[in-house]
Every structure is written in structure tokens, then in C-alpha cells.
Length: 488
Image (cartoon, rainbow, N blue to C red):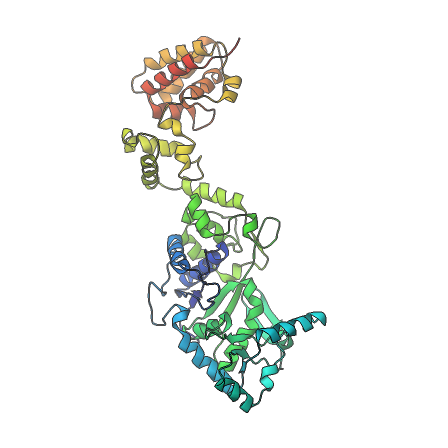
């Protein structure tokens, strides 16, 4: 056994933002580790210096921390198998590359970019099914190689893929997958700048860090035979592989920024809760086999298994993400939402000192089933914090009649007689007023909502009135009667 307990890793490259596909890979590794009493390792693969972005590593670490996917080992946590940043492990890769050269399983390639371009062009014209290196430098004599080294010619180290049986991969998600060796290129392992490629560093690090399960995206499946050959050449035990399905746009094309946001940071900036995003991403290719769609992290851990991961691509449906977000907000306690609302009030046009915690908690209770983001508490219900200055013309046209001011005046009179009214008292008074006027309740409900909020939608009208309070309701209603004018 590679290790007595499972060890898995997420190994992103600091080349920009954290893609939601990367988040899913990290999450599935994390869930698998926690479900099996294992360890989740974070490793930064920063050996592609051409794609390196300054500050991306720090952004990556901060974003992962925000998601709540906390590594057991990593750049910030440390551990017994570090360093956990590949650029700090270069000597390790070079030593292993030298072992492969000595054993004949790798060789130095001195081909110039010009020759490689000519080779690709000739293969293209010949309409070969695959572009592959032609092993030219494998035929160089010992003396020729020594002369080139002495003259300090630039070179790379290539994998020496030799003829033999098919490379078979047992994949937890996809079953057995086979690759003909003649389709496997002599992959570059060490680049001319001395940095390893992903393939070399990935295998060496996974072995040295005792990774038992390699859980990654489907796009890496075609590279896996190269990795299997490297494990065999080093005489190392293979980990188990699980390749996750692609993430797709609604039109079934591969998820891309052209059709919407793909960065975790974008969803964080919009106001999505990390719990909502984690819940949504967990369902992109996995289910527990039932109809449940609302999850918190602990329940995901208790139910997760790689055997329940699907093979086919998973559609990234923003409408479903929005629904999950609303479910998580509805299930949050009012106390947890309160600090966010108070912070927004401080930064808003409203007098934040005018509202007690008790009042704000009532607003939260009334609105939390109607918002998508915390910012919606102000954007969709500013009338709780300031009387309306304008009234929706469409609602006026639909709900305000010539006799509405008279009806509302009678309602104000009834409200004025109430002592500390709540939901039930406002409801009783309104129904009694409607009955005394010989009209339906709707002819009071819709105008009073418009009068106190300026719009035609929101929480239940009696809850709205109870939160605002009798004096404010009467004041706003009187203002609306004096302000709203319609033609006969």
C-alpha cells in the first residue's frame, strides 16, 4: 500500500483565478479525504514560468480559504512532505530525470524550435493522425551527446516511450481505459530552463507525498498513460485514478468565460455564499442517488463517494445555483444575517443609527425568503429604511382609483384607534374597514402597500405594516393620499 490512510491532493497552477472546475476538483478531493478519514493536501504547481502570474498564488490560497476547503497540508499549513510549492523542489525533479536517463527511459533532446516546427509541418502535410516527436535525438551517439553538452547546447529531457503492450488504466469513474503506445508521445519531462513539465513534477510529487488517489478533471485522462509509464519506469506503486466529468455550458459546449462567469472570485464578488457555491458545485457530476439538493458541508462529507460520480458532462446551470443560494439564505438564522445588513446600512444613504437590532431582525425575517443576495435587503426593500418619494406608475394605474384616497382615509382612522398593533390587529382593522365600506379587501390591501412602500410587491402586507409601525404607516399613507393624483 502507498499509505495506510487515503491521501489526496489539489494541485492548481497560479496562472490567474480559481476556475469553478478547479473548485470542484478541490472539493471532491476534500470530501473524499474527509469521508475516508484521510488527508487533503494542497500543492502549488508553479513550474510553467511562461504562464506564471504575479500575485496569483496568494489569490488562489485566499480563495480556497474562503470556500472552507481547508487543507491538512500545504504552503500555509506545512507538513512532513514539503515544500508544497513545486518551484522549491527543482533539485528533486532533476535527480529523478537523471535516473531515467541512466536507465534509458528518458533521453536528452537538442532539437531546435525550428526543427520541431518543420517536423510538425511535415507531419501535418502527411496528414498523420497525431503529431509526435520522431526520436531523432535518441539516435545520437554518446560522443555526440557529450559534445553538445560541452558546447552548452540547450536541451530538454524527453520520456522514451518504447513499443510494448497497451497501457491500461483502472479508473474509478470510467472503468478500464486502454491506450496504444504508438499514440503516446515522447513527452518533455524537463524543459530547457531546467523546470519540470507538469507530467514529471506531478508524478514525482504524488509519489513522494504518498498520494493514494489522483482525483482530477477528465482533460487529464489522455495524459495519464504517460504518468503510468513514469510510475512503471521508477518501479513505483500506482495510485488509484478518478477522472471527473467535464463542466458544460447549457448548450453542452465546454464551460468557458465566453458564456458566463467561470471564476470563483466572480461568484464571491456577486454575493454568493460559500455554502451555496459549495453545495452547487458538489452536484456538478455527483449525487447521493436521491432527490436531495440542499446540503451543508458535513452532510456532503457523510454521503460522498467516488462511485457516485457520473461519467457524462455536468451542465453549469446558473438558475439552479440561484435557487440553491435562496435556500441557503432562507435557512440562515436572522442573527447570522444581521451583521451583514448592518454593515450595508453603514455604507448606504440611510441613517443606520436610526434602526435597532430588533427592528432589523424583523426586516430580515420578512425578506430573507425573497432575496438572492444580502445586498437585496436594501435594494429590494429600501422602504423599510426610508419613506418612498416615488410611486410605481404601473401600480397606480392598476390599483389606485378615484375613491382610493377616501377609502385609505377611513383605514387611517381605523389604524389610529389601535394600541401597539401587530400583524393580526392590522389585518382585523383592514378587513373591518373594507366591510364597512362595502368593498373587497384587495381595494385596501394594494393601495396601502403602494402608499407605504412605493411598489406593488414585497412581504405580506400585514407583516409590512407591523414592522413599520402604526405612526409611520399613517404618516406615509397620508403623504400618498396628498401626492398621488389621477385624472377622472
